[in-house]
Amino acid sequence: MSIGAVLDRLRPDFPDVTISKIRFLEAEGLITPQRSPSGYRRFTADDCERLRFVLTAQRDRYLPLKVIKDQLEAIDRGERVDPGTPRLLSTAKSWVAPAMDFESAGGRVSREALVERTGADAEFVSELLAAGLLTPGPGGFFDEDAVRLVEAAAALADYGLEARHLRAFKVSADREAGLVAQIANPIAKSKGAGARDRAEELTREVAALTVTLHTQLVKAAVRDALD
Image 1: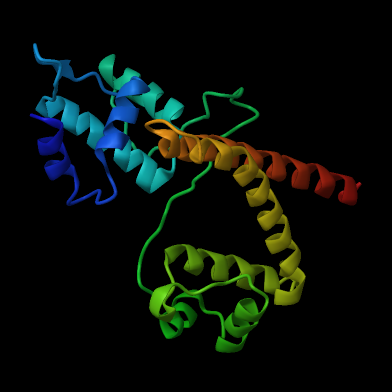
Image 2: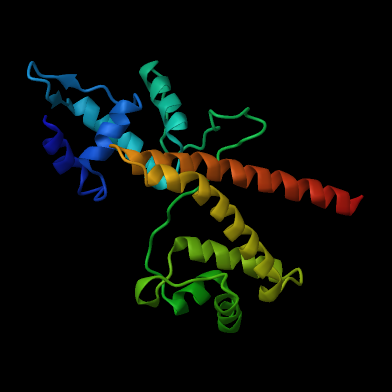
């Protein structure tokens, strides 16, 4: 298949995939298409399925390419690997950087359904919105990540932490995201093919490590508080 034929196969499930993205994945060593005598890329059905594995792991689990590459190498060795299975970051020791679930959960959840599914009352949801902890998407609808957020906030409320108290977590998250952006933005704005793809991959790696660091810092602080 030509690269255009591969795009036609993948775009129904991955509408954002581009020729640049496929070339980037090739440059990173995740696929190795053959070359015609005139230099054009030629893909097999196996190459296409390999791309589907990579794109699924990125979209559904937000896994870094280094982790996905480890999984593909395991498959090449005959091992059975699920792209949705959490794996350790290859850029850090396993006891330091466990894989983080950055699943991009879609969905179309109304405000009424959000209240019903989470068991939180409408007033509490309004407080989360007012505090900036919860933000609706287009049309005023929410996604599955919002459902998880409200569930967690409601559980914390049972321990006496109100929406206004949770604002501190939002401030902390925004600061961490800003640091990640400072690292990734110069790469995204640089010239050359695949710049944005490299920036997105770097964001996955750094974001996962920042979440790990945040988790360990909170654990250490809680231990100190208990002592």
